[in-house]
Amino acid sequence: MQIANLGFPRIGRQRELKFAQEKYWRGETSQAELKQVAKILRRIHWEWQAQAGVALLPVGDFACYDQVLTLSATLNAIPERHRNQEDDHVDLDTLFRVARGRAPSGKDAPAGEMTKYFNTNYHYIVPELTVDQEFSVAYEQFFEDVEEAKSLGYAAKPVLLGPVSYLFLSKAVGGDFDKLSLLPKLIKTYADILARFSEQGVDWVQLEEPILALELDADWQAAISTSYDALKDAQIKILLASYYGTIAHHQALVSSLPVAGLHLDLVTAPEQLVEFAAKL
Figure (cartoon, rainbow, N blue to C red):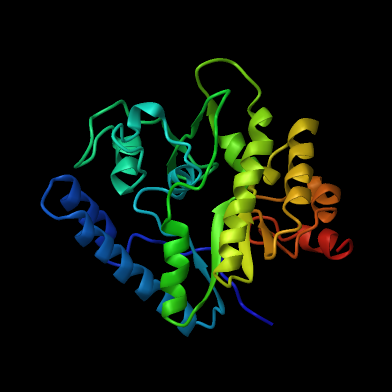
């Protein structure tokens, strides 16, 4: 039996990440110095988890702003106003311009919308998607973090929001359209991401679909089925993760998905274990 962990708080025991960010935003340190603080925190946090017996260490749960924004950058879903107009390169300052409206480099622009992440006091930057939105792998942090964990001798389990929850949490801009119309292109880029992880020697990836704790209409339920059916041929095992409540009302849907593992929130809803255990 292997022990895994959903994720780990990133701010640091003494709030080191917060203070390093603020110093960088004030122009008192370099981006390289901020990244070094982040690297040290990741190493410490992985070491603590490994010492506690966690075999599959979460990677990609660390973000210098929020993990939804990091995923948007990875998918190249960056609003036009925040892009680097010279070479369209996506880097850490790109994320800060989206989140804050400004960064130590690049032009100021209105920040992205911030809202609460489900029933928590944690906030995320709402992805902005257009009707002709294209996706591609544009930001390397996930893959760099995997290599970093591997270099320390750890088995990395990348953690990222699943495609359907990502669309659900996003907003349509520039016109009224069905966000689910973007799902085929989004799934293709997720497949590219999983292929990259596989090439790095990753065995498991954690895709999180917290919207399963909500009441979903038929279209969103179908999107879940479509997405994981399309990703089933990836040369990597998918751990489908839910949280923030029971998903027993979607038990038939979830049990039908071609995934290698399932995480249930048994803290909030321990009663669902019996129902799922009887079906899986």
